[in-house]
Length: 209
Image 1 (cartoon, rainbow, N blue to C red):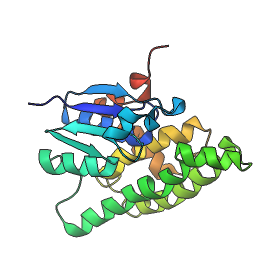
Image 2: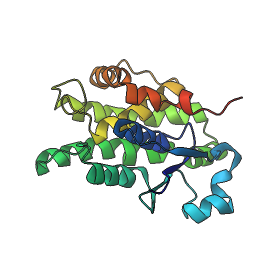
Image 3: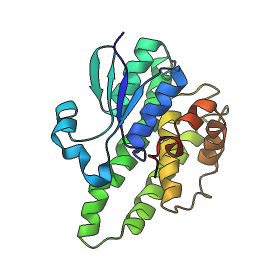
Image 4: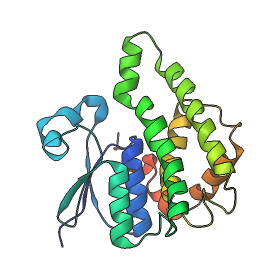
């Protein structure tokens, strides 16, 4: 069986999602750190793995996979994880809230986008504190429509939960006020209590000083 390898940056929300997924499934893996702040993502070794010059990349099952949601759906389909419901309507609801985080909030707050905004006169804190709450307002509304169970969509972890926790970490990092999002906070508290989410936390993946 080929070794599972994750090309990872400890603070990357996208890589954090994949660490959560691997942890939930109990899949052992080796981390290869790619320091985004040092520009290692644009170096030839990483570009050979991920032509977009991003993280994460996951080597698993003899395949090399990129894009966190594609990786998570692959893991869900090949390991019967249950992160996407069997019912098509419910599956669309989970995807919608997961995509609201991973495709609406995250790209605007991606490091390379935020750095470009700073080069045009914005501040990093101001940029994050504007766009993260704006996106979370919509997520709060989506989760409040389905406010049954401990997690985003019931009592089983879904793709939305795997996306939500890294986004909340990022929000807190930038000092975003979260009191206006009680449903999100309740779900986050429940997920934070799970050992798999704790094991994937950036503090566990942070390089030694």
